[in-house]
Length: 340
Image (cartoon, rainbow, N blue to C red):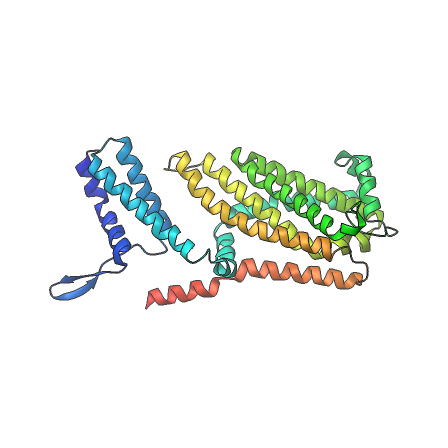
């Protein structure tokens, strides 16, 4: 395609970018009347920005004039500064992100989130149920000495439930550090595995589902209901949902590598990484919350079993309602405003 044809084809959107970068919604005079110029709206901003970056890449690859390439580069840099610089000026609006941005993102990426949840929870629940019928099957997944260690950790006779630090004086701090390290390792595996075309994320989601299901099924069959389920009830929701979100972020990376669409694979990977990192922010918050609960609240044997289970169910309900409902009101108001 000749440069003149390329400019003619794309100049309308470039002019819209110039208006947006200047003063969004500027007006022009038409027959003596002020008419609003179209600008880049929030709902088309991500796709339009990708096209703008793609235009710059094409101009360079096709060796168009330096004048055109320079103008496109300046436009891309200005757009990047406007979009991401604004976020920095707002100080990384974590309140808005947590109140509406994160749940909206999870709903928008429901396909990879649902896939990650299926890859994790189906093996977990299947293994848990199967071990009630065939209890010796646990040893196909968990070595006997490791199974014995879990039995000691959650035995009704155990003085302390869960991980037991060797230094009693720093018990709570060491427990917190252990659970943070353990949870972060699982999340990182599920996320980082996405770079292998998503196969690593699939493997670690299924593997961790099988392992957690094996431990839960084995201890349930042993009769450690109050000690084990009372221990995990409080932190299960943030920990397990954090694993799913980490896996979803990894699958998002993998999908960009497998099916980049019309974009170059490296550009598709960059776009996917922006989404994946935001999912990972949510996973990290849930993971650290779970570690604090697991270290400071879950081991307590003073609270009744029913109370612990009740708190755990309430946390599951709160988190599920948050991801399904939070942020919808603001979206509805924005649509109503646009309709008027």
